[in-house]
Image (cartoon, rainbow, N blue to C red; front, top):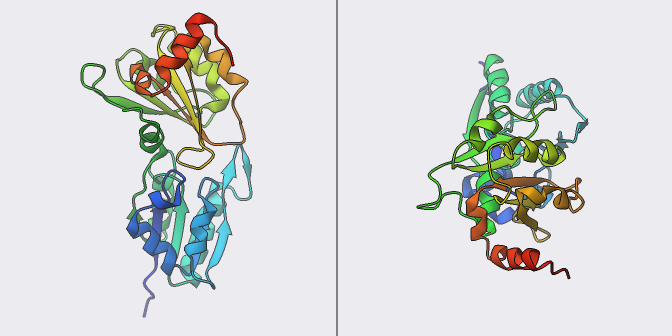
Length: 255
């Protein structure tokens, strides 16, 4: 009799352990083995069973233990050797998380996949800082764009987004900030506000707010070891500190 094989793909949320879904937490608590990514808050792993096997398969800034192909095979091996398998990914697995690739590979190997969505940092980071992605009378949509494509360049979609009134949320773009700002400044005013949010929803969360024309000021403030997102658009002016910082910049005040 063939043994039923299944992997549960869980989105861990943006960082704060309390922002994982109830269903995702239950999956972690019952897993025999968890293969987790670098952006997952490891505090979540304390919820796992005492005898659960925990495998770090994360990759950051091109530093990796395993290639994506090796991760695929590890998931197949886990499905062949364990009863309850969780693949734990930061944010939501389908927002630049390569979840679709892993599902396709597993299903081609005859392994079912259950999907438990997660809260994406693209939504949670601005919201946690009081920045609405849409606001009546300001904009009617938002774009979520990768800041680094597979060849290391910025996405061509950035220029399309910049020509609209949409809020632009850029993931994985910290190291390409200069290229991103230069591209968007071809279409938007230098007075357009932007925010950089790092370690979103965590206790050490940081935010930098400025106007696009001053983007070079932010480059020296970025901690490139910390995950971050870039938010560009007039809605950034809704941040509680934006007006105060604008006044300080206009007066040339520094602290």
